[in-house]
Amino acid sequence: MTYESLISSERGMHAEFTAEERAFRDQVRRFCEERLPEDIRAKVLEGRHLSRADHIRWQKILYEQGWIAGFWPKKWGGCDWTPVEGYIFQEETARAGAPWLLPFGVNYVGPVIFTYGNADQQERHLPGILSSDVFWCQGYSEPGAGSDLAGLKTRAVRDGDHYIVNGSKIWTTMAHWADMMFCLARTDADAARPQEGISFLLLDMKQPGVTVRPIISIDGAHHLNEVFFDDVRVPVSERVGEENRGWTYAKFLLGHERMLSAETGKARRLIGKIRRMAARLPHANGRGVLADDARFRDRIARLEIRVLALEWTTLRMLDAAMEGAGPGAEASLLKIRGSELVQAITELATDVLGLYGIPFDVRLLEAEAQGIEIGLDGAAGILAEFLYHRAPTIWGGSNEVQRNILAKHALGL
Picture (spheres, rainbow, N blue to C red):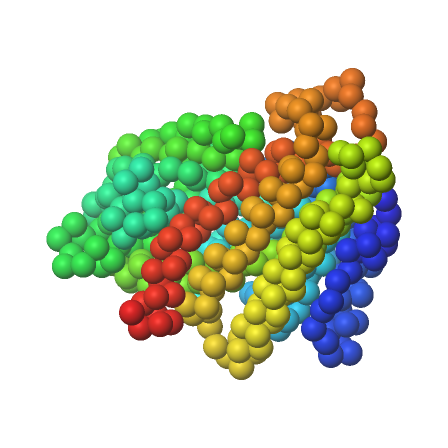
């Protein structure tokens, strides 16, 4: 399937963009058609696991275009994209089958550094983030502090010009690939509130005392890890901002993380895959194809309505962002709705595949040939997508926590 046919088959209702925004959207589409490597796009569309080299190759293509961090200020190597342009870029690349832009450097720690870091930190770290020559991971969750992040126990004790860090992190995405970690650690054990006494540290993953152990998730992939710190020395010069003020920087980062949770472009791409499968699979009654079934049409229509509603909600928030408002409690709403929606979509995809999904063991996704051919575009990746997307309602702060945030900050309860 060509890129243009993929886009045209999945183009839905959209808000009206300005002429400049439509021109930018068309530019992103042409860029994806011309520059996205076909082997990488095929892996994404088939639900196969991408290697570190795959991610870096795509990110360097974006870097050459000047789009790796388009929403960054030009002063730091970005394009000063408006929130709407950033949204268009994310949606169009996702729908085209581009890899997830690994966010830990560009979307997470980079903005923290250029907003709160000092000149030396900006000079040393931002170029490597842009070029993807330095790979980052996020050291937040711990075995006893996941959704309750303020309960973290990792300690950083001051020793002259260094902190001595001891403790552990868990569910650390891509830590086995990482050169650096941005890490929350407790620098004041006697603080009155758990949110106080936490500092934001930039930690070298290659130094002695750092141990990474893999966690294999239910989709058969190794993207999660445990990380252990045993007397790891972190220079005080690698602390971002003030000591014991790390919770402020962590909240800034989490707000931006949750704003990326809607992923309506990916949702539209997955719905397009479901429609193509249903158009080829025979109906259980032996007459026609599944796409003609009234229950299927009702179910997929409901999902498309949810995608449209989420898209409009996102655009309303972007409109507020254009007026200078930062991500607030509303970002929690995007996180809840986006994560629940992608789960519902992958559940429908699995139901549509039905018995045809039995042969597709996720452990065999990378095999050159499974000896099975049912003529369905990307069918082998459906189960992997379904299993992988059990996690979004947990990561970035579980949806239960997001509802508490909305209750407190939006509803005043």
